[in-house]
Length: 214
Ligand code: DER
Image 1 (cartoon, rainbow, N blue to C red):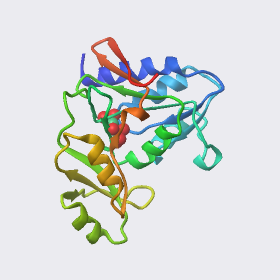
Image 2 (tube, protein in one colour):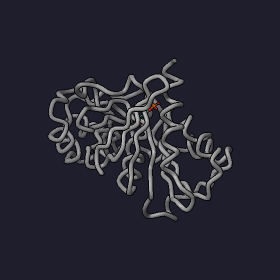
Image 3 (spheres, rainbow, N blue to C red):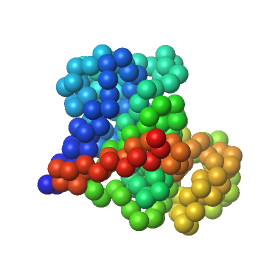
């Protein structure tokens, strides 16, 4: 089984949590790309909100009903991928630069379900943390944060500049608090365990279900 197969297996497992009548938040990324056909295939009466234009287009093309977020103030469930999953439930997201919208949707969901292949669980978060920054005052924000490398990618759909914070990730809560407190930083890709309910990790055809928050 390939990593792509595992993404599909995890995505297909997650649609069992979705029922008719639900309002569903749709994440962004290569794992969510497998979620959308699996969800559409169930032919449920659901309303969806997408976290990116890419997801919105794909979901609409598959016949899912995609609403503007202005029409929705909460979700029964949100389903999304992740870049890294720590044993205690901390996540790094934003490899696809959609972490700000993804966090708004996850935070508004009664149940946030993470879907992942077997490469995503880690013993400890490492590497860098995606950040979205305001254009206004960008040089000052970069100076304040000290170690952000900007990505050569388009702005976010909300006009944000995308970069990655490089530094010590050994205390995710402290780092999340520091990043959140920086004026000019729109949001970062550290998602706390308090936001995460379920993690579905595919290992071959099997799916490990971690309950992070009941
Ligand atoms: O960019 C993001 O936040 C994505 O959700 C990311 O965390 C997972 O992307 P993937 O499914 O393509 O690995």
